[in-house]
Image 1: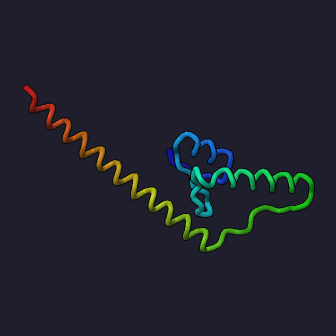
Image 2: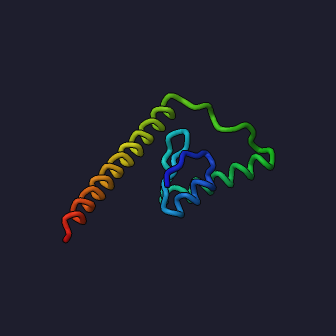
Image 3: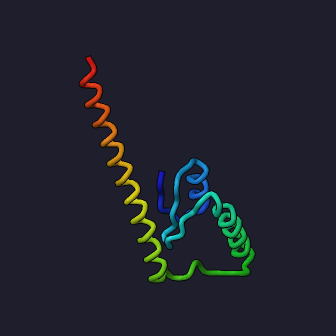
Length: 101
């Protein structure tokens, strides 16, 4: 499963279930990074609740957009390749089965 999400806890669930998650800023979450991202998210939530920081994330930059587009292109290319391999494999299996007496 692949998802684009800014919801860090959701991304953590997706990763835990073997999926992939990408945030709208182009950061790919991975099993190696998701724990630290969750920790930082919890920390900033606590700081906001106590009034120490306000506002939200900085505006999207062109670099964010480029990073997102790059990761999305890679995802789509891998999906397309997998789909072609599955199609070719199933067609090959069907041909072999039709030749069985």
